[in-house]
Each structure stands twice: as C-alpha cells, then as structure tokens.
Length: 152
Image (cartoon, rainbow, N blue to C red; front, side, top):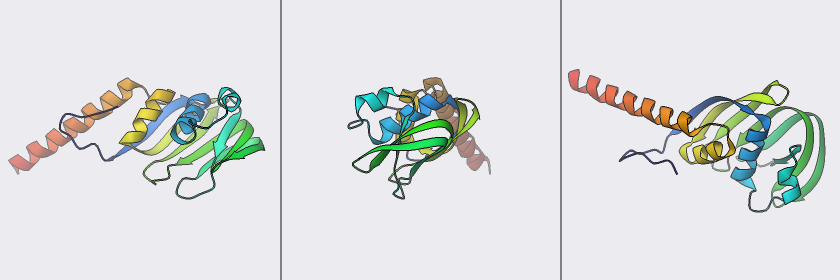
C-alpha cells in the first residue's frame, strides 16, 4: 500500500502512461472481478470484463467482440483487435481510458484515486518508481506552496 508520512493522500492522481493492452486488462480484472473470474478467462488475453452500470461503466471497443458469459454484474467478452477500453470505478473516483497506439501497445489517460494506484502498479500499468516520483513531485509542490504563502 502507498502511504505518505503524515500526508492526506485522498486526492486524484492524473495518469498518463504507456502500457500494454494485457497490463490494462489485468488492472481491470484486479479492480473488479478478481475473486470470481474463471481461471480460463483470466489466462486468456482476449477475454475482457465489461459492465453496463454507471458509475462503474467498463466498455471494450474492438473490431470483433463476442459475449461469452455474464457472471454477477460483469459480462465477459472475447475481443480481438482492441482499439480502446473505458474504465470507471463504481465509486466514480477513477476514470481511465486505454487507447491503442500500435497493435497491443497503448496509452492510459485519466484520473485515478490513490487506492487505484495499487492495482495499476500490481498489473504493470505504472511502476513503483512512477508512483514514488509522483509522490515526490506532489510533496515538492506542497512545500513550494507553503513557502510562497509564508513569503507573501
């Protein structure tokens, strides 16, 4: 878990990172259905979860998509030539979009809660180093704001 020393980390984190389709697929599964996804679906890089509710919408845009099975509130689809994925958390605090750049490589942009950073890191969407750099940058901005408050 990511913790700051005496800092309140309940804020949104702007995400803008290159990552593979598989890393983002793993992130979506970890964040939504890891406890009940069939193992064969988890291991198949063409199977993605979707959810129709809002907040909590998950949508896969693909050239070819077939519905496999609905389990709880998730619909599992087999998707080929994925162009993009829209992910929003049920809380509404995280809204991310993965867009294909080339084949299975893409870019994730959007806002994530600090809790979401754990799953993004675990899935390989962002690195631990990325998180540490982000926290250092935010701490520096806070310090700079305090310093300018004192000098004004």
